[in-house]
Length: 330
Image 1 (cartoon, rainbow, N blue to C red):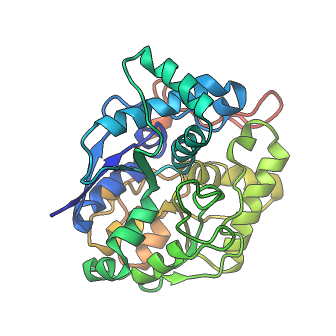
Image 2 (cartoon, helix red, strand yellow):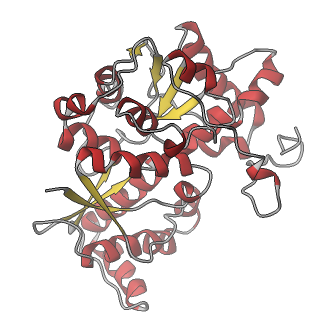
């Protein structure tokens, strides 16, 4: 019988991080997991909104928790919701925690929710990151049993980013300074996991919109460390981390005169390859820094690169700097 979880994709997984969504949905049935997408979910507000106006921001996030609490998602008294995006995971778990700790905040949030016929009792939903579900509920042994095509010879730098194990509002599932769960997972798939001391350092987040120099330096440090250990790819679990390291890698090369060419992939994509799923099904080919060389190293035929999906008016643009900074054309 499949384990059932609520699924909160968030905004990124519907567009720029679609490869993450595709690969997560593809590997779920292999792992005997069933995702039930939340009905009528909305944006979590990312990182900016909570810093601008607390009550509307908390109500925005709490609306998702309220929906999750009333939707039949899993057995037991507490629904469990998986959030693949690290920012979504942080916001959902933080709002639940702060509403529990601050009754006045909870009352004000519920007053706002009542306008839409909703309410939320703190603690009624447990928010978990997808990596936590994979390594702790499914487990390494069960994953190893599903591996059909071990990824031998592929050198991987596992990148956690700074959010999923800090501060651990509903219980941290890994060490906040030097996590190892993704390392162990990649080893279970057969990859060679390289030492990556900056694995939990920040990618800069939305610093790309604020300070070009700071943003590019933070990204460069991560790329340089992976290059020093001759990683074939950096594997991450956060759409913002993937976007910064992938989308701004060319800008880093121009700015510093470097020649980095390190594909930035999602951990679910490598899981799918090890399970014998087709690369195209897992969203390969959508990355900016081509993963063809890494795929060829393990005998996987890369899917044809799609046409410039993001170039048209209806496509998602690359993030832009303020005046004088980065832009699409820079």
